[in-house]
Image 1 (spheres, rainbow over the protein chains, first blue to last red):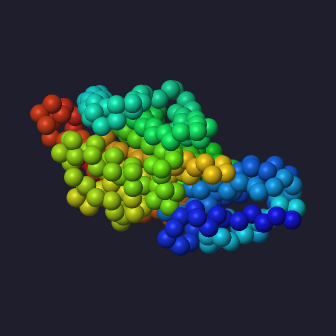
Image 2 (image 1 turned 90 degrees about the vertical axis):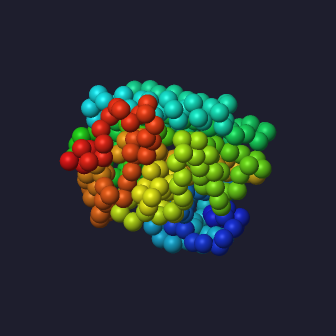
Image 3 (image 1 turned 60 degrees about the vertical axis):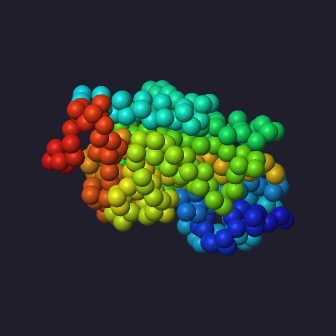
Amino acid sequence: MTAIVVPADLWDDGSSAVLGTWLFSDGEQVREGTVVAEVMRDKASYEIAAPASGTLRTHVAEDDEIALGSAIGTIE
Amino acid sequence: MDAKDRTRCNALFQALGAELLGIAPDAIIHEAPADPQAAVDEDIAMAQLSLGESVATNRVRLWRNTRCLVVPRRHAHSSAIGQASALAGMPVVFRKSGGRCVAHGPHVANLTLVLTGDHVASGEPYRPLLDLLDRLLASMRIDGEARSVPGAHCDGRHNFAVGGRKLAGTAAFVMRRGKRQVVLAHASISLHFIPNDLAAIMQVERALGFEPDYSALSHVGLSELVRTPSFADIGTDRESCLA
């Protein structure tokens, strides 16, 4: 199982963001490197790629607040 | 928009293009194709092109779209989009950047900046775009500031505001593939503010579950600000526009 983590260096002021959208549903198969989610901060959208191939498990709902370095889901 | 307003918008777009080429000689300036979604997607194609290059790049595009409303793609699967489009009386298309609903059309100039390499900090995606906007509009003797504008649609801290009214809104999109990163930041510059846009935007946002409350008084178009003789004698004034 591999965690999908919001990169800690995506921005540097430590501000929080929200999970904008999941581009795949929980339980769907995804390939490593595929963009699976978008994080929204300050009207900017940041792509989050799958760190591995497998089954996507989403742990955070759309519009939930998230922090840099936090896990938003896993790949099983 | 009547024929005079359209002529005035064309003149303002051409003037912006001429000024931009003086700042960024490699800028792409064009009218968009008939398909409004394809026009929006050209921004992403430009970013993907930059992502695939090994050297640092800096791409600039000034363009106009056909009449439509544009919302973040997170709403693409909303069942309300069809109804929203019908209510607004124009197509609703999708972009990858954040924010809320905006209007495109002959009265809006879109400025897109795509940066890679040392040019870019993903945490500050707006600074290079705002610097470019500042230079571009200063060449037309317009001074503005980056700020939020209460009552403006798609409001944010990085609007370009003049006299406390929103002239341009901005949004951004960051792509990362390994260590390679591309920042796309774009601005929608109002060439001629049309109050009916706000009504259409609010209809769409209500259909999407938001509770918008925007005011025409929080917005301004370039046609109000550029008072050179070549522009002042064509088009309408704000009062008749708001009437």
